[in-house]
Length: 440
Image (cartoon, rainbow, N blue to C red; front, side):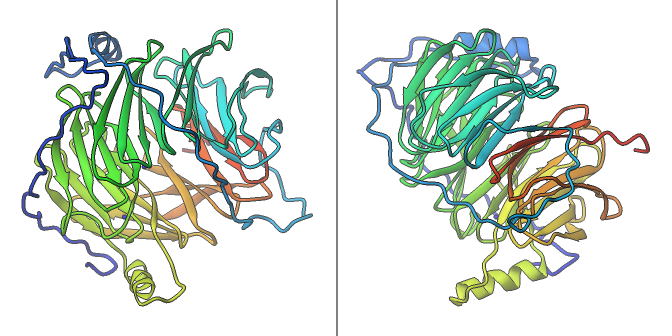
C-alpha cells in the first residue's frame, strides 16, 4: 500500500492527467459476468453495502503459482539488548516466536486482536487477558497481513508467499483459502464480506467470502504496493511501484482516474489514505512527497513537502547514503489537517486549507505508522524506537508516551473509543496499552 519550503505547500491544481485506456476486468475460464453490483448514489450504510456486494457476479480464478521463498528483515533499533525498559502496557501477548508484523482489533467491540508474524503464525486472542481463541494454521511464510471483517465475524490472514485464508471468528473454522503471487497488502470492504488485495505481479484482486468468487483489476506491470477501499465501498484507490495511482470503479472494473507522469510520484507508493467522505486521498512515496488527490476529478490539488525532507531526497538522488521516505499518512476528522510520518522520524502536521506546514514533531527514530483519533485532533505514532506517542495537532506538543517494547514497533491498532492501543513488535511480542486520558 510520498516545492515548498517549511511552512508552505504547493496549492495549485495540476492539469487533468491523461487517463490510460480502461482495462477490462479479467475473468477466467471464458465466463462472462452475468450480474453486477448495483451501487446507489445515496450515502450507504453497512447493511446496504453488504446487500449490494451479494449481487456481484465473480468468475472463478485458477490457483496461482507457487509461493515465493522470501524472508522479512527488520532492524534492531529498539532498546539496547539485555536492558529492562519501563513497561507501560496492561498486557503482553507472548505466543509468537519471531517478529510480530501486523495487528488488527475487531471493529465491533474491540475485545479481540489478531496478530501475524515471522513465525508463519497468526493468532486471534482476547485483549483483556491474552487468552488465545484460535491459531490461524497452515501458513508456510511470514504472516504480514491479518485483519477483521467490518462486522468482526471473520478474520483474513495473508502471508508473504501469497497464501490467503479466511476464518470464522466464532469457532475458528477456516472457510476459504486461495493462493496468489507475492502479497503486498490485504483489507476488508467497509460494509460487505469482500476482500481486496494487491500483489507483486501488478494485479489487484477482489473476492467474495466465503464463496471465493473473484475479480481482478490489472494496472501497471509492476507491484501494487498499497491500496484501500474508499469509504463508500464503490471504488478503491491503489498505488503502484512505478509511482502511479489508480482509482478503480469496482462495479465497472475500470479505472476512473490514473495519476501518473509529472502528476504521479517519482518512486514507489508506500501508503494511501482517504478523508472521511472519500472526496480526497493522500498518497505517500519513497520520493518524500505527499500528494493530495481529488477523487472526483483525479487532479492533484496539493503537494506537501518539508525543507528537511527535500534536502534528504536530494542527497539520495546524488547517490549519498542519506535516505528518507513517507511511511504513513492520514486526515484529521475534526479539523482541516493532514499528518505525514517520515522514515527520518519527522511527524509533519499540514493545514489543508492553506497547504502550509503547521507543526514538525521530531522522533528519535523512524515513524512506522500514524493513526488519528476518530473524534479529536489527537494523532498517534509508533516508531522504530519501540514507543507509541500521542500528539496534539493544534499545538504540536506530545501529550503522552507509552513504552515497553525492547525492539521496533512494526504495526499498531487503535479502538474507536481511543482507549486502547495494541502494538506488534520485532521483540516477538504484542502489547495492550490503556491510553484513556481523563483530561482530554
